Amino acid sequence: MRTLFSILIVSILLGAVACQDSGKPSRQNDQEIRDNDDLEKILKPLVAIYEGEVSNPLVGADPFPVQINVFMVREQTGVNDDGEIMFRPALQGRYRRLDFPPDLSNEKSLLIRYYPETGQIALGTTISASGGGVDSGFLSISGKWSNNQITGEIANHRSVLGTIHVTKVNP
Image 1 (cartoon, rainbow, N blue to C red):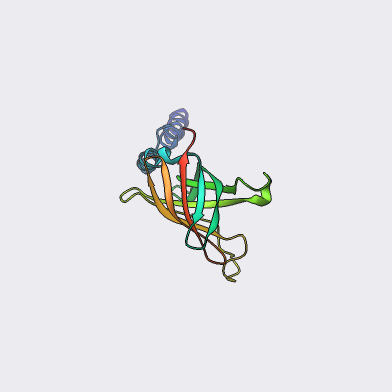
Image 2 (cartoon, rainbow, N blue to C red):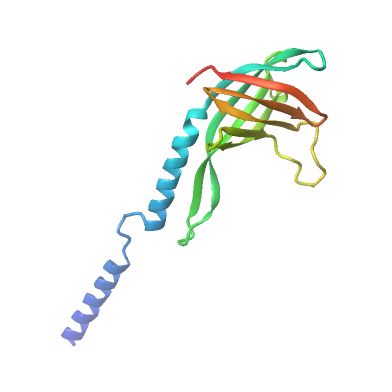
């Protein structure tokens, strides 16, 4: 009986040790960490406050000053095989006209997509989830990021506003 009890205890302890988490990340976690580190290295140089102006000489409109604050966030991308939430670095931003009063009604949240292979960058507000198209808060910028500058076309819910040219003002 004593031998049977000893075997039972040893089996339970061995089972507990075998099931114990080693504290090391899984191969899937290792890959996620490497991928996130690589992506963060690509995106980090874009993180900054940019200032400049929007101009449209074709319609004779006066240029107006703008600011874009680009920052990095972690977006949820799903769950891994172990059911753990997965995240990846992504860029988001805030756009505001500097010639308007500095309140939240003058700011627009931006989702940002950067294509490092070409330097192309797309910034835009979200479109209404109801499927009703763009609303009066819509803003879209498509252009290029190069030499700490973003240059491209800017449009709102009505039409193309003109050309935007902003330069990084802080690291």
